[in-house]
Length: 318
Image (cartoon, rainbow, N blue to C red; front, top):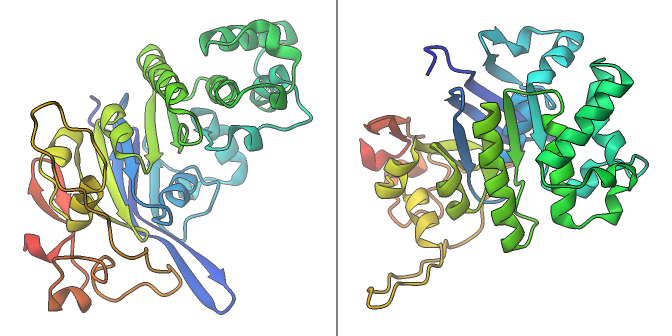
């Protein structure tokens, strides 16, 4: 791997004004993505995963922190410069149908990025659209049909083809398989892996599905209430989770034991994630934490190394 990561996210925060209150969507998030690597971004709904993904691409403007892509600080780019840089950074959305214009055919949707960035002649663009359709497992004959005529899995394949059109280096997959049937999920996951190897892609894979994240990711970032509470290489995190939130998340995954294997206790995370309009003091997880101490309610823990490339923000690791 290159000594310079493809993407570096440092202390990025994103807030929204809601009436007279401030919604703390993402707070001081930091991690990096190496070339060809998949970062799994995991947490409950409302943890800030999607907001962070969109902020990294500057679909949402960060309020503070720096986002550096290939050594270039994206925060300092003008809108015109950022538009050009987006050729290297694309997104696959959870709701594939909503992300595709109902007035555009499948072919038009895939060709659109090429038109926006003035890539190739009409004949060259048509040839690339045909190649991309075939590469994601769709027939070139679908070029003239509309997205609503496709199944959910086919719509997502169109979204993937569109994301690949400009030959990006980084793709943010925002819950890209969560709306699909399980059998279709497996097909799309395998496709994403094949494309990553073929085109040397890096992924930020946003999901609440811990099993999918474990299967796809090289490194995992765990978010809770807009904050990163733990991050580590995937094997290290799943073998030795440190933060109580990560542990409870993993215990809440229902798994069928093998014949003769001892059953493990199924634990459900109590309560609901607090409102980001009024985040708790101290550790954000302390109101729901089964191991909370007095200090957790008053002092926010700092992320500390607890293993090889393994970091946890918990007072228990002091």
